[in-house]
Length: 67
Image (cartoon, rainbow, N blue to C red):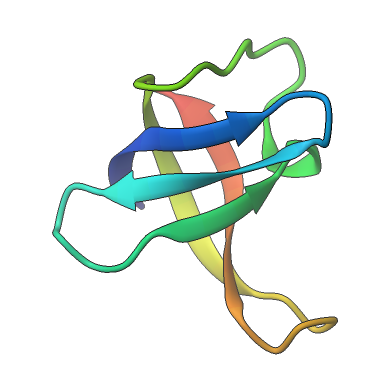
C-alpha cells in the first residue's frame, strides 16, 4: 500500500487527489474508494492502493483509508 496526503477534495462532487509521499504524481480518488464512515479532509494522511480505471484508462486510488 502507498501512503500520502489528501491534496484536494471536493466533497460536493465526490472526488479528490492524493499526493503520494514517494514524490510520484498526484493520484485521483472517488468517494466510493473511501472506507465507510471515514471523514476525509485536505491534509489528511491516507494509505491507498493504486488500481486501473477502466472508464478513463488511467490510474486511480482504491481502498483509501485514514492512517
